[in-house]
Length: 306
Length: 258
Image (cartoon, rainbow over all chains, first blue to last red; front, side, top):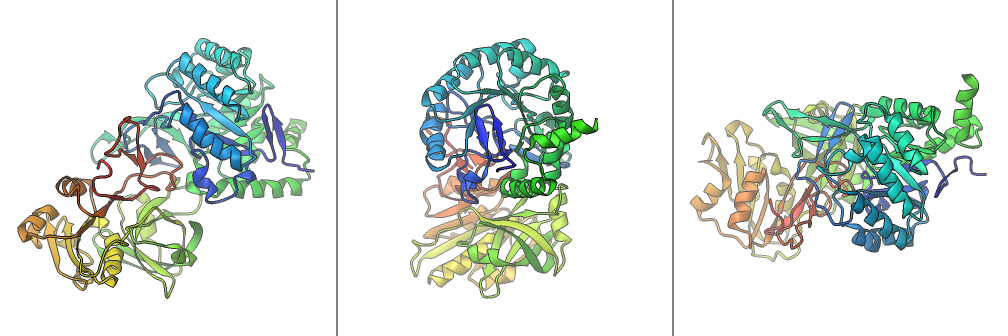
C-alpha cells in the first residue's frame, strides 16, 4: 500500500508533492540533482504560443521571508516546448506533467491548449490566469470573474486532458473567481499564484526589479494561501493543488488541513534545491508514524475535531 | 553539485567590508575550474529565502579547503561575515562554468583585469595559467587605496598595475586607462568586475581570445528560474538568451551583450 498516493484528475500521483510552475524550468536542471520519478508530478514552466524573452534584469529581489520575481513568462514557445522539453521529460520519466498555459489573448491560450492536446504527452493543463509580470493577459483573466469564466470555458472545450485553473490572490474575493471557473468546467484549482509587490533600493529610490513590480512568493505569503484555500474549500469539492510558501513538512500538513489535495513547492526549490525529495521523504515518514492511509485522512482528522 | 554544511576554517576582513572566508568540505573535490561559484545560505530557516552566489577565489585540494572573497553589503553577506572558525555554513555548489585555459600555450602573454569583488576568481585563474608556462600581467581597479586587497598575491604572479578612481594608489582612473597608458598587449584577456568595466573591455576587445565573467542577481543558481539571463550578440529572433548561472558565468568575449 502506498499511503501517500493521491489520485487527482489526470494526475495519478505517488505522493502529493510537485514542484510549482516557474520554479523548476522544464526539469532538466533538477534532474542533475535527483531522480524526477521521485516527484508526485511536475508542473512545467509556463508555455506561450510564441517564444518570449521576458523582462530585463534584475528579475529577482529578496524580501523578508520571501522574494519578488518578474521573469515575464520567458519560454521558447509551444513548438519547442513540446519538441524539446516535454519530449525530453516524458521519454525519461513516468512522472505526470502538468503543463502551465499562458498567453496575452484568449486565442493565444486556445492555441497552446490545442497544440498540447494534439501532442498528447502531458497529463493535465494548468491555466495561468494569474501571472502579475506581463503587460497583457495573464492576471487580467484572473481578476475578472466573467473573463475567467469565458477563458476557462473556451480552453476546456478544446482540451483533451483535465484543466486546472491557477488562481490569483490579487483579488478582493477569490471565491467569486473559483466559482466562475468551476461553472466554466474547470477540473481543479491551483492556488495561489504570487502577490503583486514592489521593492525600492533605498540608496537610489528606484525599484530593484527592472520590471518595477513583481510577484511575491515564499514563506511570507503562506498565511494568505492557507486562508484562501480554506475559504475556497468551504464552497467547492474541486481538487485543489495548494501552493504559496510551502517550505516544511508542517506547511504541507497545514495546507492539507486547510483543504488542499496536493501541494506544489515553489520558492523553496531555490532556498534548498533538494526541497522536493527531502519533503517527500519527511512526509512519507510522518504519514507512517501517524498511521494514516491516505493524505485525505489528514483532513478527516480535522473535520472530526470541528 | 552537492549541498553541504561546510566548516569555516578562517575568516578575516581584508579591506573595509571585504571579507575572506576559508571553508572546509567535500565540495572542494567537485570544483573543476576557477570562476565557478557557490550558492551560500546565510542562515538556517526561512529568514533568508535566496542563497548568495559568491565566486570561489581559489582552492587548496590537499587540505580540502576553498577561499571566497566577498563584500558584506546586504543583510545576508553581513550574516556570512559573522561566521567564525568552527561554525558551519550551508553551501550548494560548485555552480557554473569556470574559465577554460585549455588553449593557452607555454610562452603566451595573458592579461588579467579585475575590479573590486570581481577580482577573487582571477587569482585561481592566474595560478592555473602560470602552471601552463604562460606569463600573467594583472590590472586591478579599486575605488581608492583603502579598498585595495590581494596586491601581494597578484604581485607574486607577475607584473601588477593598479588603478583607483581617486588616484590614491596607482593610476588615477579605470583599468582601461592603465591598459592604454602602459601599452599592454596580450594573447589572452580575462576579466571579472563591475559591468561598466566589462562593457568598456568588451567594446575594445570583442575579438580577444580569453573570457569574461559576469554577475547578476540569481534565484536558483542552476538555470531553472530564468532570473539571470542576458542577451546573446547573435540573436536573429530577439528571444535568444544565455543563463549567467549555468551557461556562464564565464563567456567568450563578444558572445553576450554586457
